[in-house]
Length: 242
Ligand SMILES: NC(=O)c1ccc[n+]([C@@H]2O[C@H](COP(=O)([O-])OP(=O)(O)OC[C@H]3O[C@@H](n4cnc5c(N)ncnc54)[C@H](OP(=O)(O)O)[C@@H]3O)[C@@H](O)[C@H]2O)c1
Figure 1 (cartoon, rainbow, N blue to C red):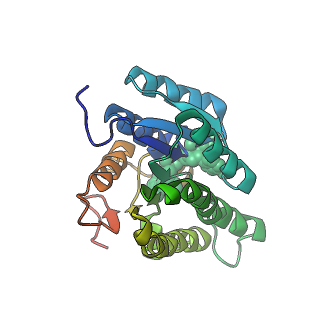
Figure 2 (figure 1 turned 90 degrees about the horizontal axis):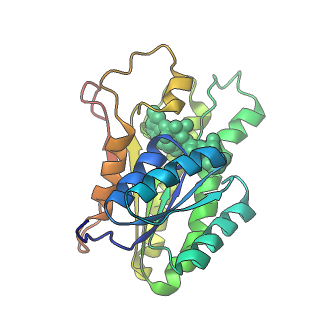
């Protein structure tokens, strides 16, 4: 493998047991990064770790529930113990429970906010405490097209992703003096287990692939230092521009 701008970079990727997170961890490893991967299911993390290692990079799997603030702190501590630094954080772990506003239980409303918004906040805060003294770092948050426009039955999910977009932009502003970059990606429908669970009967021909989003992450990380790509919207060619 020839050296790239990612060679030897330490990248924490949440939700890396499957789907977009797994594809991102593998793509980053293929480009030379060493991923620290987090999710709740150990067996899925182990499978991702095997694929990362077969790309010739180190991988540290850390079973983590990102709704647990102390667990997010431990994830970052484990990464620092193993690698001594964190260069990149990909806040990808996410989940969805849908329902019309009048039907949605408080528990399901909170679930969307807990995983998507609070989890992103907990991991970012913990990682920033390691990045800020080094005055360098890069955070990419995976939001959704659902954060940019309304979809029926997605009130809590849309609100959680709109909040992730807003949080990302405040972070970008607050962290600029520390040399830390923050981007947000808003994909439309991606053919993963989440999409299969939400839309089991939809034909997913032409849908975005997890690898497409992973490629976009690398693209954002590769931006020259004089520019920032604040927000990247990815949609199916067949869908309407946002
Ligand atoms: N698929 C789409 O159409 C689509 C579109 C736009 C945006 N997105 C966003 O993209 C991200 C990845 O989604 P995906 O489609 O790849 O979904 P996925 O295939 O279901 O993967 C989600 C990953 O997140 C992890 N995760 C879920 N809850 C977690 C928690 N509490 N703590 C730690 N890890 C957790 C899962 O592992 P465990 O269950 O083992 O914890 C899994 O590794 C999400 O933020 C999602 O909202 C998806």
